[in-house]
Length: 314
Image (spheres, rainbow, N blue to C red):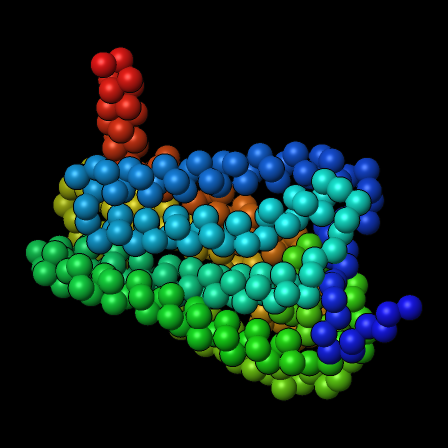
């Protein structure tokens, strides 16, 4: 029998979402449907933001970034999950697990920072409306979005590299539906104290930093909104900001619970359910949240559809 390398096994067995095999087919159908909605919804947001001349503002530049992040983020986990749910093979190669963990950590952290940047954009738009186009010029928008991507990459290189250096002592069964760092750390047979401390400290910094920026920004935004004399303009500002806050709550709350809880304090079943929120449900919900509560995006989608239909008739 071929001996398994303690540090670098050939593959991992993913235990998946449930211990009941009869649930695999219904879950496969549910997550395939949600994935298709995620792909179509976020692609529509990207296309309409790029093709409609009335949506060429910093707000929609960041929304395009968020939609692209969500497309990549959900694609990192859902296809592998569907593959495992749809067949008898529940494994993932060691290399595949590494790639998945690195990319997931990169994109997840980048989205966390980007949501903070979007709150800053809303603060400038509502509290400095006359200087908005001057302050949030294209150069600054590119710098802010680039910072989000680079911080996510730096975090991933640090956290994932430290995690994959830990000895596994032949352990291959990962009690999760994809390769996430907290689950991989729990598999290690050595002392994981340093890894847990670094994961907690970095997660706290990269979560609470943007979250603090969001809370402070919306504190000033609330004051500015209440000073707006027009009820229609107040409602428009409220709809735009409430959409962003809903996305923030869906993304941040499960992540904070998973990454900032002391090791072993949470049940793994609860961790799996919470993980589904920020890596499956939130990317699917974002396009609906932004389009249903944003009349500009809704009108732009209608214009794009009319143009597509009229071009086909010609």
